[in-house]
Amino acid sequence: MTYLHTLDTIVSTIVLPAAPDTDREARFPRAAIDALGQAGLLGLVSSKDVGGMGLGLPEAAQLVERLAKACPSTAMIVCMHLCAATVLEKFASEKVRRDVACGRHLSTLAWSDNGSRSHFWAPVGTARRDGDAIVIGGSKSMVTAAGEADSYVWSTAPVSNEGASTLWLVDSKSAGLSEPKAFDGMGLRGNRSSPISATGVRVTEAAMLGVDGGGFDIMIGAVLPVFSTLIASSSLGQMDAVLEAACAHAAGSKLEHLGSALCELPTIRAYLARARIDADMVRTLRDDTLAALAANRPDAMLRVMQVKAAAAEAALEVTDTAMRVCGGAAFRKDVGIERYFRDARAASVMAPTSDVLFDFIGKAVCGMPVFG
Image (cartoon, rainbow, N blue to C red; front, side, top):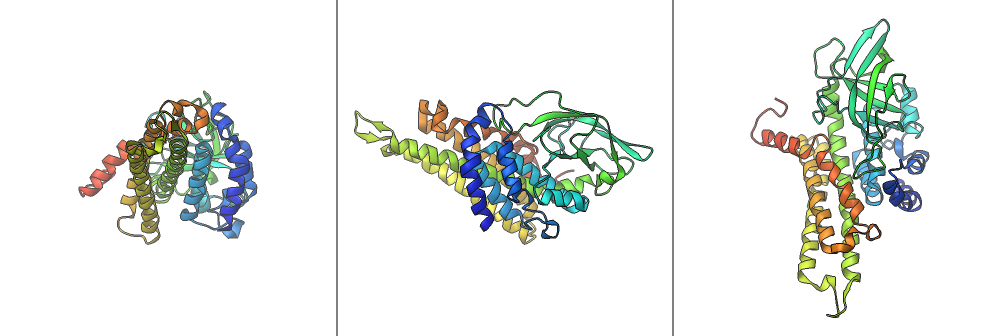
């Protein structure tokens, strides 16, 4: 587990000290991303054959969880990079794979269209042949690391085949790409989830990732398990952070007229106990999701859908509890609660949203086709 020792050093010396400014100024955490790249951590899931670490989803989950405990914005950028790297490792050229493996290439997913929004599996953007080139058009509503990543794993409708979508590797500096407005969000303020528009963007046929019309299978079969598990791990890191801060505040704040600390109140302890149980149940579900995927269990995809929804909803409850326990003090930035409270809002509305997942899970448990 030496990669975790390297990670902990980067977190303690770079990620955590910069987190307040990353949030306050909506600043992309470039120093942290560069340090993670130089340490080889952006190549965590890349094959050793191309210079990567050759590790898997369990290790990626630990990476994102620890980053999220310090800076959820940084964790979100890394999460989306690892999702994109999962696709690139399967379908990109050796040069791209090597650049990803050694930390020279930051990528991200560009899937949520303005027209289909959280239904990311059904893009309305277009791709058409023009001589030897493919011309891409469309608008993405939110792209993590917009303008900062080196490439986008971009989705469009198929060029000519049947199917829901086709995926492309698009250079972020391609002519025709634009960022209509900068990201200025309530939470995850440093992750630069801006909209991106593509107007007449030209790529080669070789930029296709997989086969024309085969994007849906890659999205759901290869990427959704990674994305759901890593987003859940990010929620776990955020819950751990707010619980530590809330417990420290409850132990250190005195009711001087009573001669007791806040943590001596049974109601305070009960709130914290319930929040700790919620977080620990999510960790158990996350770990069982990893086990189900590793064993290729029949319930693996059910767990994949459950873990993101469960973690996102628990994070809302736990961060709300931390705010309640710490009272007015929690509104102060120095207490270390309100930033995570804001950041935790994102997971439940990030595609597939909790409401969409509840529908999918309901279909699954009723024996209905999930995407029917």
